[in-house]
Amino acid sequence: MGDATAKQRTYSFLFGPRFSARSDGISYFAEALVGWVRRDVRATATAGAGGIRTTSVFDVTSNNLALGFGGGIDIHASKNFYVRLSQFDYIPVRVDLELSNGRGWSHNYRLQAGIVFCWGLVK
Image 1 (cartoon, one colour):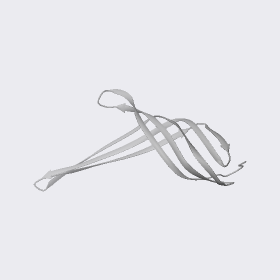
Image 2 (cartoon, rainbow, N blue to C red):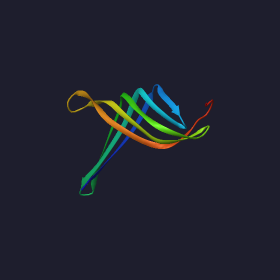
Image 3 (cartoon, rainbow, N blue to C red):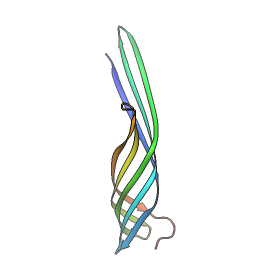
């Protein structure tokens, strides 16, 4: 009898311009980002019979190109505090395709909401 587990961690590092427009206490923004993504995958399998157990560990780490395109809406609660109603991002990531000996794209989406604190000069 055996068991197997797999864990994946993904870290995105994206940089680029954000364009915004403000009116009547509301800010709209759009962004175009470029950077990279790091993926760490660890798979562990344990098998055995007759009191003998064998564990195999498989680690894969990859770094690839990532892009980000999106936008959102903020509501001004005070001079340095905003409520982010929504932010939507499309994040295509270049990936290695091990089985086909080629490269392709992974299509990822992110939807967020939250609060924004502004430090520094805000008009």
